[in-house]
Length: 307
Image (tube, rainbow, N blue to C red; front, side, top):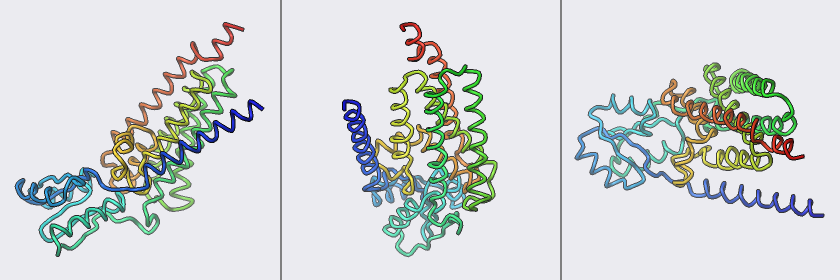
């Protein structure tokens, strides 16, 4: 009876945590500090900034060509010129719509030009999100199961298994999204790299935390990687539209970093992918460090010392 009661309480706590955080992250998406380029002088840009308010950060560019380059490098989410508005819906439909609506207030007659539209194979821009979720959950499960059922295996067996899993998982994700479904076309190697790094980061972190902390480590991995990771990733609305806590956390956790990297590899020619790839690599290295600590201080070691 006590075990059943504890499991019931634990399940209800998870229901509370997941529903509260996910609803808090997505129930009222709105831009906050969305970067917008304005073609003109700094005084004009300041005037546009006052007109648009704190939801946008307006940056002055001396030519439309430079502002357009900034948009395609993902430095800004839109460009406002005197008679034209440039957006890139491949970077997220909500930012493109927000910039367009805001630009109507300062340039009512401006024509809208989507310089990087979403293709027919990914009409709402959801394929990168589900590629991340589809890689994340199995990788988390694999890392947890390896920490539980493989804790008696030597490290020289467990860690190569994680590397092999991640390598193959990257190719499986790329095959599914590119070849099988055809949703993310033409960047097989890039998708395989990002998905493989995501699988490595998640499985290594889950295994390392579980190996070091036992059940507490596993719960920590689930909370960080799944609960906070997915809720802060931004999903279909992009992380720039989430509340401050979630937006600040987004690119530091594997799901958000991987989502940005896949979008930028697929639609922006690898622009601004270094930071998210480094974040994934850091999580993989951190997982290894936790696992190595677990070899000396994990619960299975303590149990062996104190039978």
